[in-house]
Length: 55
Image (tube, rainbow, N blue to C red; front, side, top):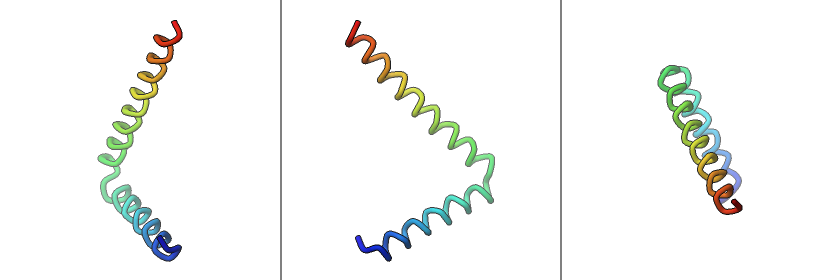
C-alpha cells in the first residue's frame, strides 16, 4: 500500500470517528463501553486460563 493511500485511509477513518462522536455522542460512548467490556472479559478469560494451566 502506498503512503498516499495509507494517509487517505487514516484521515478518512479519523473523520468518520469524529463525525459519529459529534453527531451521536451517547451512542458512541455506549459503543466504546461495550468494546471495553469485551476486552475486559477477554483479558479475564486469558488470566483464568493461565491460572488453571499453572495450578
